[in-house]
Amino acid sequence: MVSAVVVLGFDITHAITTLVNFKPREVDVITAVIDNKIDQRSLVAFNSFEQIATVLGVRCRRVDVEVLDFSKAVEVIRNVIMGRLSSEPNVILDLGGGLRLLVVEVLTAFLSLPQSLRKYFKILLYIEGQNRFVELGNEDFIQELAKGKEAVWSKLSYLEKVVLEKMEYNVPYSLNQIYEMLRQAGEDITKQNLVRILNKLIRKNYIERIKKGTYIKRVLIPITN
Image (cartoon, rainbow, N blue to C red; front, side, top):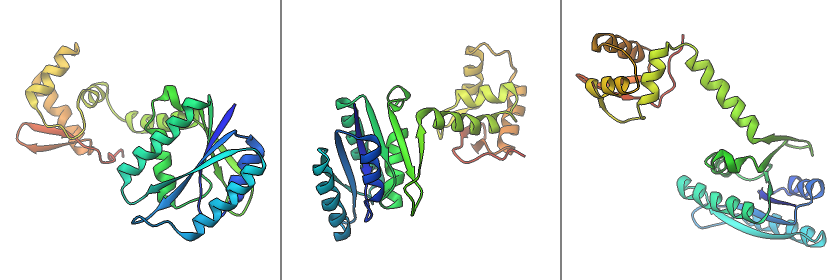
C-alpha cells in the first residue's frame, strides 16, 4: 500500500495527478506558514484538494509548517514523513507545489533520514504547467552525491584523503593530534611529511591553519584545479 506527502501551494493540479496515478490511501498535505499566517489561497487550494480526495476515498490532513525557522521546519517535516512511513511501507513525496523554501525543507528532511529509511520513498518533481513529472528514488541521490565526492577526491593523494577522513569539520586539531590519529590508523608518516600534506590541503582550500600548529577542516567547497 502507498501513502503520500504533498507540498501544496495555490495549484492542486500536481496533487490530483499524484492521487490518480499512485492511489495513496492517506495524504499529508504540507502548507507554508509565514509569521503564523497562512495565505488564503493555500487554504482554498487545500479545501479543493480535500474535497476531491474525499470523493476518491483518500484520507488527508493539513500540516502547517512555519518556513522561516529552517531547522524547526525540517524537524516538523521529518516527523511527518517518518510518521507516514510507520503506517505504510511505501511513501510518495510530491514536491510539485508550495514555496521554494518549503520544498527545500522537505527535501532536506528526506535527505536527513538514514539510507535504510530513504529507500522506501519515491520523490515526484513536476514540470510546471504540465502534468509530467520526474520520479526519483534514494539511489538517484546516492549516485549523484557519490559522483560529486569522487570528482573532488579523485584529485587528492592517498594520505591527503586519510587526513581529511580523520578530521571532523570545524574542530581544531593540533599537529600532534593529527599525527597521532594517522599513526593509530597504521600510517607510517613523519611529522615533516605531515606538514607538507597539510600545506597542500591548505592551498587546495580543504583545511585552514587558524594559528601556528592548529588546523581545522573547512566546510567550504575546495579548489580542485
